[in-house]
Image (cartoon, rainbow, N blue to C red; front, side, top):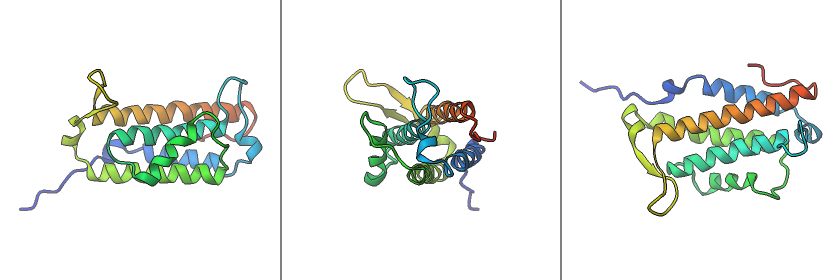
Length: 161
């Protein structure tokens, strides 16, 4: 008898819906709307989305999942990075989401306890796959909330959660 392999996609059901809502909110925005911020020292809407994309790449690089092309998206969040259009941000969200989905389909519950070293040197943190996935989800939710707050503060349709 062939045993069915259980993957992790069902464990994280709902993240996909949140991704779709974020894209729906970002796709129609103008460059002026992407530049909105709630305070001068805080990230703009576009900067927050670029930060979400960069964070996904950064975390999944630790897991060995981001190829060279995807790894370039990590630089979207560096100081002095050019502002991205809504279409670019949507492509970045879709590309990183595809990377995440591909990984979740391959991984099994047993893989959640795999250990990864984040950085170099003897003091580099050792993290489980589970902790890195949850860190990515928390990061997505936190900064998507900032996007929603900023859009709402400026009377622009925010994420419909």
